[in-house]
Image (cartoon, rainbow, N blue to C red; front, side, top):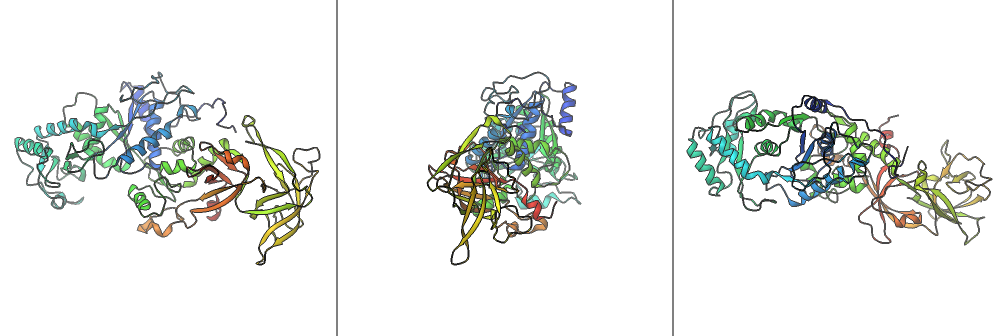
Length: 602
């Protein structure tokens, strides 16, 4: 085990293998494309979430591994659902997830020649440099809306070729004409308009002459096709709405299916990698491209199964509902699977990339147990987190034989497996705090922590014996009076006496108070919406507990970018709500999977 903060060379990574990478490798071997070019194309209608992380790592990862390029493109074709806030959040999240990729253990060396490492802003190429220590260039997004003029011209081409027409059917009538999977649809009565009439109406639609919903541009394909997406789908609709990127320049907007394939072509994408729900859209993707006079090689679409993690929801619509209904505090609430929430909770980009790589890429739709994700987080934080002492639910201990007013400095390691992380001093005094659960007045069998008449070692310090239990009028334990074996100091010449239990502590005189937010899974059930149930009925009432903890004084200087293990408790990170003298820590994850125990797993 090594601390990833240390300047030690990373081991040779294992390059992932899956059916998409095998396909790309075959294309590289046969020289099918001058360069592999992928893209990650979210719609800016919400924040990115855990499922998007898999797609980001797949698309940018393939570009890394095969010496190619990857674009971040915002498929912004629906102005009423998209906002500048989401644009900036996507840009921030993607850059956070891929920044420093060259420096971690998943920093994959490209196959073939090494591409340039400096990418000019505005270039359609993006590549994460493979040279360790070289900063990755920031990803600047492309916008489908930047191509609206070209996409409009392609629509005119389809009209001129007799492959698209202006339809006056209402949305309700169009749905009735569409038919069903077991019966063919009916052609629109406007399907046979002349090319001249269609071009004229299309230009007038662009000029803003008609209200929303009055007319659409539809492809002329096959109303009897067994694939409903080929039954004369809509290519353009009228929306008199301001756009976050183009303002009020347009009132005519292309549908996603029309803009997406053409944006891929314009950017020179070779492999358009989508999730499985777009598999039925692929024939339309191909039909649009093949129906136009396009001189360059056409992109091809490939599908994989999306990530469906247990004990959470990744539907943007449902996430918006959780935010709007104030079930959570916002898009970056650490209980949400959004990348901003994940980042605020203290999960590192390295852990998220490791998870995305190790879950694999298949065409099989399945539920991924969130414990797999949590294991990746623990594995990462166990290597990088600095150790600190904190007591979440304190009970006072008075060492009756330790001199009053005396303080000594004990030496503690910052990381048990990394000497380069150094050591720190811990103040020790007569009065301490220990964890309330580390004492039992009537202990259960095999209880090796503190009990009346029993002994336990204080980590880095002495062995103590509980002599007296002080209670309040209600019978609650308020203080323990103990005797310290002053010859048993850890690391000392006479510290050889063996005691089964070791607990943590902080000096009462030196401890700092900190707000600690104990986050847990948001839902109690693996599939919150199973069989159509209301997911709000399975919200975890214990997904957040806020307490005041007693912490060792070094945590007054905690850094936002650092990760900490509060020894014997969990991993924590400093929250953005912290203020000078008022630190706030978020629990990233417990040291062990407590949910497995509840479920009866071994």
